[in-house]
Amino acid sequence: MFFRFPPDARWNAVRGVVEFGIGVGEYEGTVRVPREVFRRLIDGAVTPEKCVEAYHLQRTCFERIAERKVRRRHLTDDGNVEITGRDFREHQTPRPQRPSLWDVRGPHDDRGTAGH
Image (cartoon, rainbow, N blue to C red):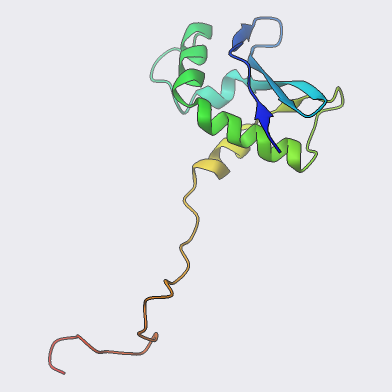
């Protein structure tokens, strides 16, 4: 699946969101990111200009979140995508790392510790 993201990010003053396009196959939609999501990214006043700038600085992150929501069919009633603060926090939270296949020591193995 190849997603398309045209370079059309803009501020929608009526909704108070940054909007950008998304497409995959025959689907064409709009992704909306409310001003509240940008509060954690912007120091000071959260102006429309700063929201659009923050979008461009975190563009890859927002696009990945939008891709995940489209794949899971988490669309709004009008068939578009809305990214919430929760979506953004979940994307920013580091995932727990699984043990490496190369780590041959078990959980109770004390090899390499002082005194042994």
